[in-house]
Image (tube, rainbow, N blue to C red):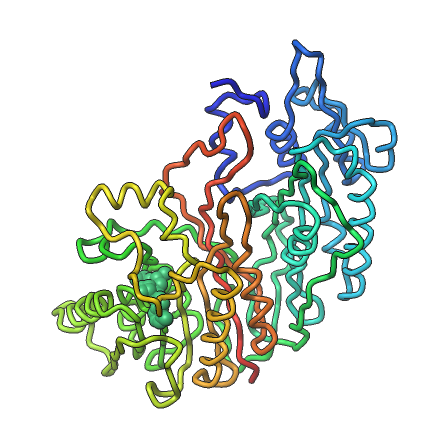
Length: 480
Ligand SMILES: C[S@@+](CC[C@H](N)C(=O)[O-])C[C@H]1O[C@@H](n2cnc3c(N)ncnc32)[C@H](O)[C@@H]1O
């Protein structure tokens, strides 16, 4: 198949499609991106023009890099020299790092909008803009600047994709983020990919800066022993027979790391959408009480079966008596009478109605094996709500209702993905965070990276589509 998108071979194309990566040097990262997003066509004497905004030193390295020969690279200030632009890169990492307030951020965003506006007409249709950004803590408040940038420009350009980078090149003495006892690493970078669609109206005037209410400082009574990792790569063991019956369970080892961090033995852990009971299994294994609800009687039976097996196992270590209770119930109907006060909630919702998408490769495989491809056909199942805004609202309402069951100062973790559907990006993780931060305090993000899946050559030779192998682990605190 002829590659009409770049000059890479299929072997070189594939690794770029993984949605997370580790890097040591921003220049290398930019080189990889320029190679992916531009194409030299010798036969037509077509040589791509690239605009970049980054340090002078990086620019010089890019301009003299042999791998990029045949591409013309200019800094944004010289954009007037180009009649057409094939790729634009705005590296905001240093600028975001230097921000001291939300109003600084608004200035940065407006300035970036002005720059993109200036080059928008020259950007060839269906070509991309890459923005590198990060989130940041200022004065004890976590600001998801990268997500706000994504949401802002999504109003003007088409947000096609995101990749999450882990910067391994930070100096040894780079401080971790300190939030009143909760310490996390500050090494995550977002590569946000926007595309100029044909006939895009590029109306910058009406774009509004998304609202962000998380202005309260995080206070905690818990004294955490360790730094919470910004990402985890978990290789779960092969799923057992009854676990495969569920289309989307998460690995217990991942959940154990959260439970261990956010609770003490004997405390109460809860999951409103328990599926096969992975949360409860992890909690019981660690000597915590395990509570939950699940809409589907089929899955709640599996969850009960798995937990009873663990509790009755001769290997189950002697620990103070732990309690386990799981209700087959719609999460919308949970009240404070159903469960004791909760020390921690960890959960993962249906990723919108993605399981109803017939085309997904995984779905086809499951169908072939005679396995269930969605959770249920129930109208109460959140995974069957077709409208994104309606789904988001219902989900938000459920978590806000759980606020009352959670003890003050305690945490809620939601594992979720941003969703790509029919070529559009629905940033569920970001939207949920912004909606919940009206009541909860949003904490620094962490990720679950999958590294055991085969990369599919989506879009090969035509356009850019990643394989989403990262899940957001969004943590919120109920104010103390
Ligand atoms: C991503 S799965 C959770 C998987 C679980 N963490 C595990 O490891 O097995 C989401 C679950 O939400 C359940 N669900 C959907 N709508 C629900 C509702 N209204 N109330 C409670 N559970 C619901 C689905 O049946 C599904 O099992």
